[in-house]
Image 1 (cartoon, rainbow, N blue to C red):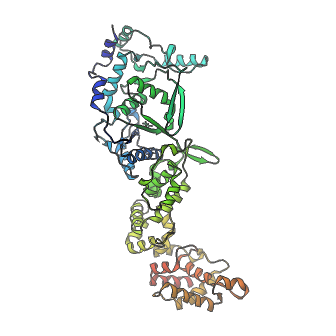
Image 2 (image 1 turned 135 degrees about the horizontal axis):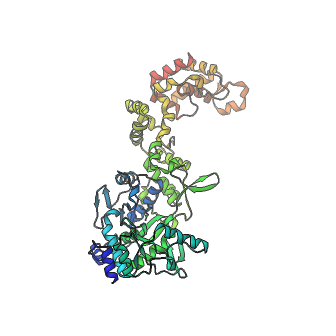
Image 3 (image 1 turned 90 degrees about the horizontal axis):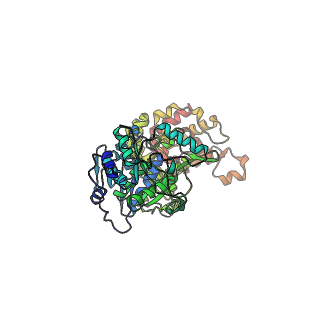
Amino acid sequence: MSLQQLADLIFQDIDKTPEYYIQKYPKRSLKEGAKVTRYAPSPTGFQHIGGVFAALVSERIATQSGGIFFLRIEDTDQKREVEGAIEDTIRTMNDFGMTFNEGMTGQNASIGEYGPYRQSEREMIYKTFAKDLILKGLAYPCFCTPEELEEMREKQTAEKLTPGCYGEYAIYRNISPEEALAKIQKGESYIIRLKSPGNPETRVQFNDLIKGETSFPENNQDIVLIKGDGLPTYHFAHAIDDALMGTTHVIRGEEWLSSLPIHVQLFDILGFERPEYAHIPTVMKLEGASKRKLSKRKDPESAVSYYKEEGYPKASVVEYLLNIINSTYEEWRTENPSADYHDFPVALDKMSKSGALFDIIKLNDVSKHVISKMKAEEVYDLYTAWAKEYDKEMYALVTENEEMAKQIFNIDKDGPKPRKDYGKWSEVREKICYFFAPLFKVETKEQAELPKNMSLEDAKSIIEAYAKVYRYDTDQETWFEELKALAIELGYAADRKAFKKTPEAFKGMVSDVAGAVRAALTYRANTPDLFTIMHIIGEEEVRARFAAFVE
Ligand code: GLU
C-alpha cells in the first residue's frame, strides 16, 4: 500500500500533474517593472466602499506600471453567492473609473489566458496540486469528527496550548496509507489537510510593502487545503491562483496579514516563487474619540449604493479615496489643480500603516471642489441623471427649463475661485429651488431672511420703491448705480464707510437695500450674485415676485 494508491483513490478523476498547469500558464512576458495585481471579491452582492478602496489601490499600482489588473471571483464559499453579483462588481468598478485587463467579464464569461478566473471552475487545478502534495507526504486526509475537534480544543485550552490541529494533536496526521484507505472505503468523510513541516521556534522574516519589515513564527498548523465539498480553502486557492495567474503583487486587506505565515509556507511547499505582499489598512471611521471599522450593519456609508443615492459624483469618491490612499495626494492636487488623477503616482510605502480614516465631511469638501471644477453642461448631465431616479420633481423642472438650469449651474464658474455650492446632488434642490417659480411659491415671505435690523414692513417699502425704478435691460454696473441712488434717496448710506462714520444718520446702507431685493426674490440671505439671479429668473418673474412681496 502506498501514497500513490491513496492519492489515486482520493482523486480518482485527476489525471494531470502540477507540471501540466505550470506549462499551461507560462510566465507572463511584461516589460520591466510591470506589476500584475488583482481584485478578488467573493460574489456576495454587497459592494463595500472598502472594496472600491482596495481595488483602486490594486488598479493604480498595475496600471501606472504598465501591468495587468484582473478580476478573479472567489466563490468557494457557495452559500454566500448572490445572483448578478459579478456583473454588479464589474459595473461598480467601471463606474469608479477602473477597468480590468483580464478576468471575469460577466456571469459566465471571461477574457485572458490565465483562466478560469472563477474559483469554482478551478476545482481540477486545486485537486491536482493537492494530489501531488499527498504523494509527497505533505498533505493527508483528516477524518476528524466535530466531537474529536472539540475534544482536542478543550484539551489544548486546559493545558494553555495554542489551539488547532498540529503536530501530536493532529490525530490523522500520521496514520498509515492503509488505515486511511480503509476509512475511505468504509465511507467515512474527510477533508484534506496540509502536513505542515513548519517549526514555530523558527521565525520567518518578511517585508510587507505597506507595513514594512515583519517577522513571525513559521506555521505549524495542519490547515485545511480541500474542504468536504471538494473546494479549496482561501489559503490554498490563493497560493495556487496567484502563482498560476502570475500575480506579482498581492494587495489585500490587512485582515489577511496574520495568515501570511501559512501563505508563504504554501508558496514554498508548492515550489512557487513568492509574490510581493501589501496589506492595506481597513477603512475606519471616527466615533466620538475612537476609531472603529466601517460596519456594514451600522454605517450606511459602508455601502457603495449610498454614494449613488446621496448623489456623490463618482469622480469625487475616487478623488477622496486617493486622498486616503496617499496623504501626499492633497498637496499634489493643489499643485496640479486640473491634472487627471491618473497622473498621480500611488505609492504603497506612503500609505498609512494603521487605519484609513473615512470621513464623510471631508468627502463632501473634496466633492464640492470636484463639482466646482466641472463645466455647467457636465453638472447638468450628472444632476439630471441623478434626479431622474431620486428627485422626480426637480428632474421635471430642470429638464423643462434646461437653458435656465445650465445658467444656474454656470454661476461664478469662471475665474480662479469657482463657487463651491454643492458636494452632492441631493444638496442641489435646497440651493437652487427658488429659481423655479413653482417651488418658490411654496415658501412664504414670512420666512424670508431679511438684513439685520430690517422689518418686513421696511423691506416691503424698499421693494415698492425699487419696483418703480428697476430696469431689467441694463448692465451690472448701471444696475448697481441705480440701486445705490435709490438707497440714498430712501435714507441709506452709499457705502459701509459712510455708514460707520455716522450710523445714526442712516437707516442702514446700500447692502441692506440689496439684501431686501435679495430677500424678495429668493427669501434667502445667502445666494450667488443678485444681478445674475435676476437675469436668470427673467424680468416677468422678477416683477411678479416684487408684486407678491409688497402685497
Ligand atoms: N476573497 C477575498 C476577500 O474577499 C480576497 C482577499 C484577497 O484579495 O486575496 O477578502
